[in-house]
Amino acid sequence: MVDVPGAPPTESQPLVRVEDLKKHFPITQGLIIERQVGSVKAVDGISFDIQRGETLGMVGESGCGKTTAGRTILGLYPMTDGKVIITGIPLENASKKQMKAFRQKAQMIFQDPYSSLNPRWTISAIIGEPIKVHNLLPDDKARTERVNELMLKVGLSPRLINRFPHEFSGGQRQRIGVARALASNPEFIVCDEPISALDVSIQAQVVNLLEDLQDEFNLTYLFIAHDLSMVRHICDRVAVMYLGVIVELAERDELYENPLHPYTQALLSAVPIPDPKTGRKRQRIILPGDVPSPINPPSGCRFHPRCPIAKEHCSQIVPDWREINPGHWVACHEVT
Image (cartoon, rainbow, N blue to C red; front, side, top):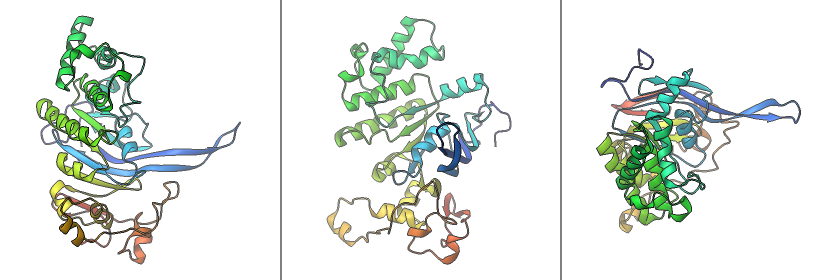
């Protein structure tokens, strides 16, 4: 735990610490007098650390809470409960001054490059806005020079800074989003499925760009994605989410070669293999039913209605978060 609020993390402390984070969206009824009748438990108690310079991947089915977790960690959604500490700054109960420092050090690359850029602003204004908000450079000339530099960093010509977003392709727009995230000199970036809306031919270019920028600026990433092959390529550790909770967390190679949780095994069995012979020999795990509603999640282990190895106690007792092997954490009663 960070001892002094606002103090920078030391080498032994993680850059990002998330403890029992919850985000519940209220469900209300009534036109004149609204009353809460339930809540959507989008994120329901997740904990993890991210070390400086590390990339943590977060994977899971659509609707499992990955994007909500990323946005809540950055304060874009107010948290329901839990703790988030980034670069030594606690998010809960932070003052305006602390929040401004927090916003500078933690940024986000959004999933959709078409809706995440203001269509009425030029590229110069979009990338230069964080510099202006955080008073990082003294005048317009210095800001323009910095925008030109960032354009070159992401592989775009500075001659394009006076154009508008609609004049760029999807891949170019995502590069602009990357440049905007870099403008405030952040230490931590949440990459919310940054390649899912792009053509396959462009995806590798954007991922390589993110890796090069991480090496150059010592960035720390939370990489949210569906593409498990890409996650294995770019991430150091991987967290698997299911219905608002993390069910497994391990080093990249350990997770892919030795998945322990039944849900992780099912996810990995769906990853395409380029070798047809190997693909035919592999057993595909088909899960029965659909993902339950986050409004009323199952009791006990949330995966038990679809789990092929579930026992009676799985529906009654929430599994402990246990370290099975060094650095390999699992929430499952049946894994030993």
